Length: 173
Length: 128
Image (cartoon, rainbow over all chains, first blue to last red; front, side, top):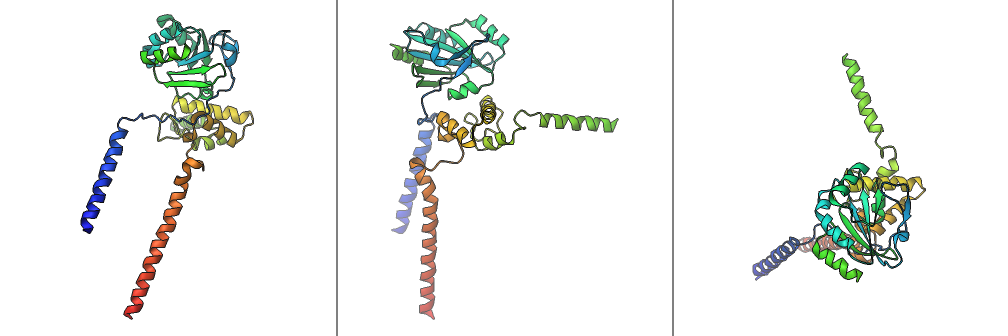
């Protein structure tokens, strides 16, 4: 009786571990915390290739209520792939499309824009990567959707695709 | 000639070690050792040379220079990336079990040992 009981216990344990491992196979590997403070400070960021500085909140035009910040760099290959979807984003009304050029050489970034087109309403520059930390970003490419109070509504880590473009379109309308 | 070469490499070595942007500030090292590099898990921000880690180190340096305290920096990063970024879990409702369980197991284990000892002692006494 004692042997059978421990056997059942062992079986349950093995099944449980198998279940946990099996489920974990399909889990997102990068941990994205949910309990983050969603509001971003109204920070000053330099415009790409000029000496102007902009406060994030001042970027909104009158009618616009949403802002998409796309973090990109010329050295980032997935950014090239997602560029056509960024162009789709630029066609959405009431959406301020902001590019944040991440740790890039001005010359290379300009070449990138010449080759693939410039869909952004405005491009800001983050030469040392510290501005991205304020946005709670992990790296390139990454796309954030902010409302007029600079609250993060959505955060897409990695390149965006047509599904995400659809999602953002729904948010904007 | 040999000694010249030696001195050259020696100076080269020293130059690159002292000229490390963050190496100058021991405080940055101290703080970044307690931070988990989020995109290269298994490494601390201090150990990592990823763009993310380098940015965090620059940010810590900037914050220290502008007079932020160590706690301010941890709180700032926690608000941006969650508690996960610090190695030591904070004591709160979510981590209660994590902190209490080892203590509980320790006491429980002690209880088991004590019981065993008492039983054995009783046995020994009866056999005497």
